[in-house]
Image (spheres, helix red, strand yellow):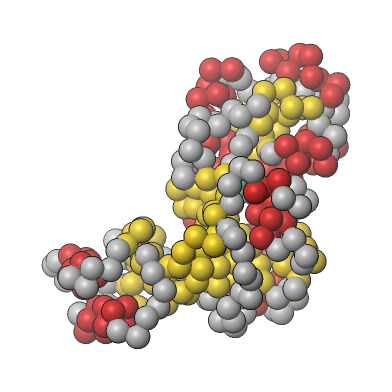
Length: 290
Ligand SMILES: O=C(O)C(=O)C[C@]1(C(=O)O)C=C[C@@H](O)C=C1
């Protein structure tokens, strides 16, 4: 199987793909939209992109691109631990406290705010398309006083020296990555990392209907369907127009979820099922599996 992922080599997405699909061909893409486009154009069999981080919340670019531009089914999810390190070109290793700029993905910078605030207060923060793109940039500019925040594999890949380990602000730092395909074909993997199934739907509420969200939620509540996430995003059609992305803690069944969807549609909402899929949880130890 050919898997597209948010690259370049040694992103956290790359680590997740390598662990989940050790025998697949991996194709890096510079941005999340490019990776999703590659799936819809059939250049790869599946794409893996980040969706949500435990400290920083949703990766809005992924959500918005999937919902507004390329509606591809989600066929799997990978949950991986995230450990952020500060790295510089070896030339700067002994005077890293004097660096003037820190490069990384916006989520990675946000995960390390406390560290940056206390240890590198005056360094400018510069956003890149991924953590490994930042590491690559730092390695290509050895004479600039700059650093990257990225993972250990990126330090190895781009020849950088880690000067501070585990600089993320909270220990529990995990990211959810989704696997999307052009057709809703299940992933054929039998993995010990399997942790359960979920179903993701998008609900658009009718305009100005008092209590609409309450009624939507009660369709799940009285069926005892457990929700693991509910998030609103702008519908991009006008101020105050939002849709809701809802994760249900089980596989699509024949009765309960279809019944809840029918009830919600009867309220005047539109509902789209983004996918019903297995999720896999990578532990810190499993992440080293190659
Ligand atoms: O930049 C990377 O390494 C990614 O895989 C992206 C990403 C993200 O979008 O959240 C993934 C995990 C980390 O939370 C930081 C960055």
